View 1 (cartoon, helix red, strand yellow):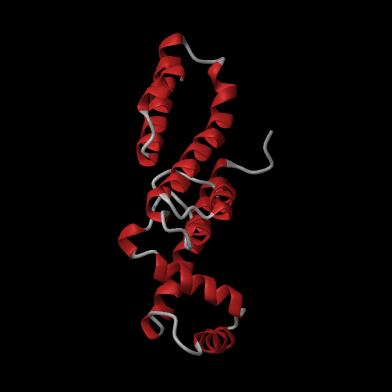
View 2 (cartoon, one colour):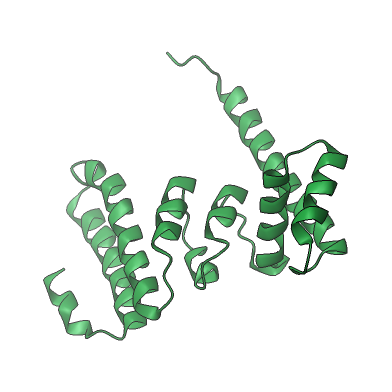
Amino acid sequence: MSLYSPEQVKRGKELASEIDKRQFELGDLICEFLPEKSTGYTSVLASFAEAIGHTPAFTIVCWDTARKWPKTQRSRTNSYGVHAALRNLDGRFELNRARLTIAQARELARRKPTSRIGLAMNYASSAKMFLRRIDPLMDQLDPGEIERVRATLRAIATEALSMAGANHNRLTAV
């Protein structure tokens, strides 16, 4: 028996979504008066943080995340925390297409891909993380369902190899 009800889970998701939305809104507000880094930007952000009752670090992350994620590029499936973790990566828009946890996004950001191969390696690493989630379910699937999962994994691997400019024939072992 769970300690929380389905209604509490639903409300928790709604509240978490609202928090994410508010952090982007705060960042967007700061971008109205400070659209880019300029001389003295940290003191401006620290002053604003004090005025609104938050820490400078929180305010800087909200601002930096909002300015690096145009509204049209923000994912509805990934949390603000994922966006914040990926904000300094050149390939962040491509990485944001996958549904990621904050821990996965932080791991990808830790490696800081700056090239196509780095991005491809991150996709491959993401696939590995998802495989860990899939593995326990495979025993519960029938052969047709297993083949559908394998086909999806091959498609993901093909995309990663294509981005890296690698030879697609290496997939024959998958």
